[in-house]
Amino acid sequence: MQRSPYDTAAALLPLLGGSANITSVAHCMTRLRLGIADRSTVDEEAVRAVPGVLGVVTDEDTLQIVIGPGAVVAVTAEFEQLLSADPLPVPPLSADPLPAPPVPADPQSAEPLPVPPLSADRLAARGAELRAGRARRNATPFKTALRRIADVFVPLIPALIGCGILAGLGGLLVNAGWLPWLTPALAAVASGFMALISVFVGYNTAKVFGGTPVLGGAVAAIVVYPGVAKVTAFGVALSPGQGGVLGALAAALLAVRVERWCRGRVPDALDVLLTPTVTVLVAGLATLYGLMYAAGLVSTAIGTAANWLLATTGPLAGLVLGGLFLPLVMLGLHQALIPIHTTLIQQQGYTVLLPLLAMAGAGQVGAALAVYARLRRGTSLRTTIKSALPAGLLGVGEPLIYGVSLPLGRPFLTACAGGAAGGAFVGFFAVLGDRVGATAIGPSGWALFPLLTGNRGPALAAAIYAGGLLTGYAVGFLATYLSFDGDSVGDGSSLRRST
Image 1 (cartoon, rainbow, N blue to C red):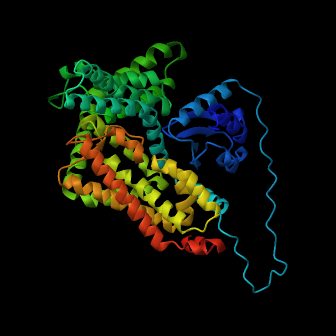
Image 2 (cartoon, helix red, strand yellow; image 1 turned 180 degrees about the vertical axis):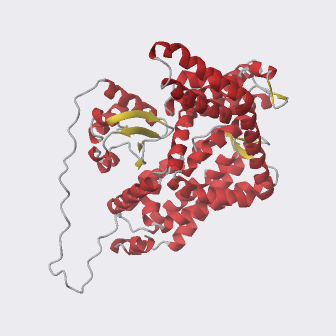
Image 3 (tube, helix red, strand yellow; image 1 turned 60 degrees about the vertical axis):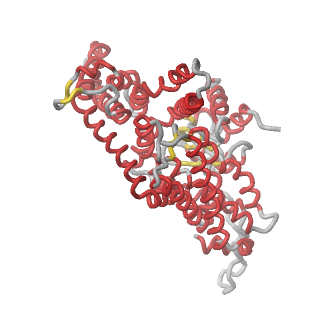
């Protein structure tokens, strides 16, 4: 019987140190993202073992529990309900050290120590070590800034997906000539959010960076206000929406800085009047007479560069993007792509980068299937792969990455090879003039099909994308199958060679 969202949330809370240990709760497409006050009170291995949990990802700021599309929304709601009930704090886990491993009877013996057999538990421990190392490497100002920018855009993904699917459906109906009375309504529903996305970006930016959210939204709203057409900057009349989400992001960041400056200098009695006024005035004028123009140049350059890259170096661009995306995820640098995706969607109606990057997941699935085929029956790792594959096919790759390929080492590299091959396949068609794009960011794998479109329609885009997935599966499988020795798993030698 399927576990209810309440049961999952109730099982997680005590393992996370209780309600007193939770500082923030949010979710993205697949993960419950939690701020943790004291990491030492979290039983991470027990969290992984909770039914419904597909994996755990940690970084400097948050503990991210992978639950999967759809289910994460329900679990997050139940988790927030449990926190709002304010139960008594759960005592922290025992700090007693784990028992030391047995010491050989003769430490001076020349006989080599026996190597414990490779198992899912050992791989999980190795994955935890790699995650901890990655978190330490990610603790830099640059990567912290990228994560905070990602926090601005991640809450917008559900609306992007919903509106993207409706836009695609409306386009199909228009092309087919069906339901002409409905298509204008669908267009309005699908386009309303995108027309005002800058306001949401501004609101979230101020919220994430420590300002007053509504002031960030107010300043960002200037970007999309029709009246800006009457304003001239650098000798050119502005256009509503010029600069897009990048202009809104810059405007809200400036508003946060101005607001903080005012808070420390304005008397308390006048703060409620002067601080909002000065914040909106200074940041608003700077937006009109500088930020919108500059952000517009950057946004145009991004769109032009993406189209040129695929039109002239399609297979090479696809190979590089598809092959390097998994390492980018490991380094936390993939978050820098979120504003670029959003800018392309705002400009062109779709992002041509996401289908290429999604090929990395295809290579990961192919590599996992090859490891499964190479392993002897009854191996615990086969059970891990079997349970994680459905999520991997839908674009949730963390369980396979941290539970299988990354701890083994070599399968992670062959998974990248599969992603590179799939990306080169999709990029080859871009050179021929057939661009494949996604109308929203978030899903990948099979879950991306409803969001696919392109310059020659969604049907051709879906066919090219499917070919890329199959190529990624095949190359990832073959490269891993030919390089991974499943017979040596029992004595752990494969893990030693890989790491």
